Image 1 (cartoon, rainbow, N blue to C red):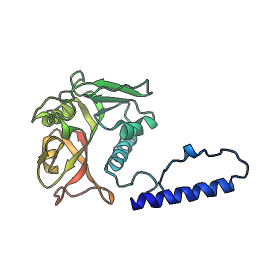
Image 2: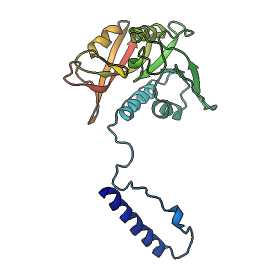
Image 3: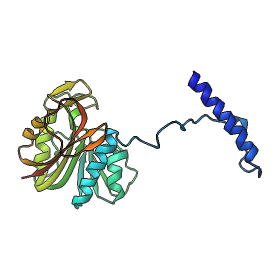
Image 4: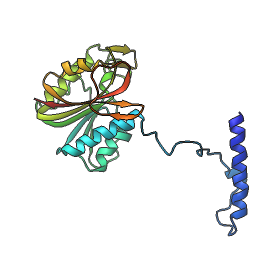
Length: 236
């Protein structure tokens, strides 16, 4: 309450000063249009160590460097990662179990499907694929998907099946010292376990989203939980 009173005091002080300085009378302020918007004590936008911000820049940078003819994505955030890809005109196919109205957005195609199997996508046909903070939710019912304790493993296999030889996969998952499930939020993975699951691929990079931003080429042995471990795999 004390903070609110302080903000209101500043608001009306600024209101009075604006009216005093507004000598032309243009854009007059009606009393009903006075609104409290107190961003003066906040950071200039999203904190640059925020997990989604860091991981999505990492992933988009990887795709930009490789510049495939087409990129496939499984369930990543549209407003962050997918938007980054579309900004440099990357033809992108987004796959998600939930519906999405694309409104004719240029360079974006959408497939509503259960990505555990990636049915309809040919084996060895995909040059570039990502799944940023999505596969850890599979099989938990959180997004209306069927309960399946092995759904994430099926997705790992499907990703490797559709990847072309030399194709790139950019995978982001919560990571920690041991495998762990927080139902029905997500799984947390020991990095070595993920690498073993991607037996048809070579690990090119393992990095972390940390409170200090991106930690590239991080150790696989962890002593705490991180909301995003970033894996860059290449199909053998």
